[in-house]
Image (cartoon, rainbow, N blue to C red; front, side, top):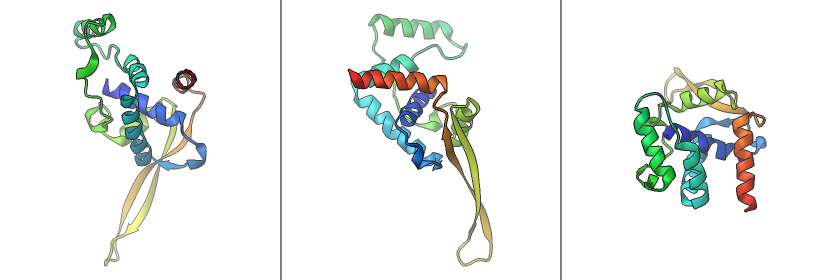
Length: 158
């Protein structure tokens, strides 16, 4: 569910994203994802939409328990209040921001490139190689983006 929550937060950021800011470091996008996660959890309607998006059967292990849990939530017998919704890459299956970015790049939701440069070490003739992931493009015609955009528009209208 944490992976789905990260995806939801990324889509929240991308829906409000202005292309004039490109290229943007993925660390800045992740910071905006964390802020979007807090905003989603603060709004009851956004939280319900996120829970509907994130609370679904994940993987093949423990399917019976997952179905039972989701059935109890759907019937109203159980509330997902015990789920600690945090936008934390380290607690997801991605484990790093680079893997998260590469995953959504492979899904063609975003375009990411790696920028490399040499930085001089102070008081030394040596340099070190630095690298950073940059968000280069948002594919606004991607089905996930379009669906999230339409849901966001409907929520703003009501």
